[in-house]
Image (tube, rainbow, N blue to C red; front, side):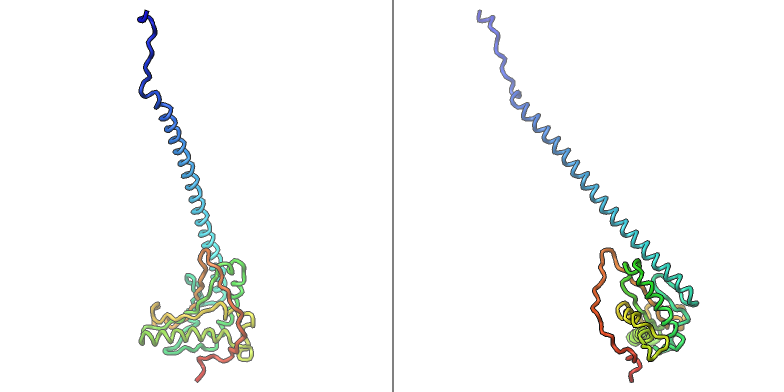
Length: 239
């Protein structure tokens, strides 16, 4: 009779381990899914940021080119003056004599006619958004020492500002008070010595107005109010 009793099946060794290994596999699968979702979200975020940055960069370039195009159209009203890159080149209409920083009456008159038109453009919202400053660059030819020519280049830049800041008591075609204030706030002087030569010494003795624009994220500098100095007398003419 004992032989007719059903024998008990011994539990297999791995029966108790199956639920544990199944749960661990599910957990790993779930973690993998979460990882993939997180990576997808991160990639989409980074891609969106890159796309936004590229779009802003492209828009900046488009805006600046639009401003430069307006300046280019403006220079066409003044024969001999051209826009080269981001610099207004006066060509033969603003040449200096050897070892001289003086402008003749016609050259000074040209500056006082052109610069107010440029200042008018800078008050446009599009130009005002990106234009940082205007650098008056003076140049010298290759003759003479470096420091001497650098000093002469700076004097030529300063001479331009003297012509622009002359008051109505000195010049009948003087800039308005608002334009003279804008020149003080927006214009800077720079001397390049003989680092950027033209094909001849005469062409090298020149001045240019270089337009500089803000980078992305760069905020306009806060300019403190400046008193209306007496600029009727140019320091370069002081004995």
